[in-house]
Length: 104
Image 1 (spheres, helix red, strand yellow):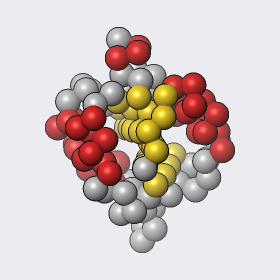
Image 2: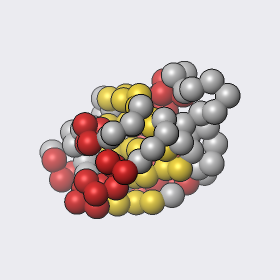
Image 3: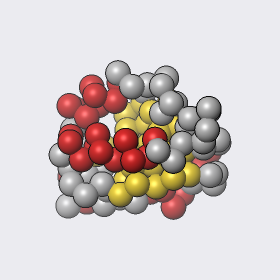
């Protein structure tokens, strides 16, 4: 799992390949992706909202394969720890973009 800031994300996101689940907040950097993606908007910065967004996103996962990457925008160490346990599941490699407080 990688935790990156917005500037680093701007360089990494255009190079991703495969199906991407993008759970976004105020940064909405999913526009930089050059591959197939499912974008799910976060309604708040609460961990419970992230859990619901992950569940919803997984309902749109490519059958049998899951996602190659999951990108999550947020700014919480609790979210990072929660996601760390999910890596290498159907979510694929997880990239956490620290940006929530930057844009509010």
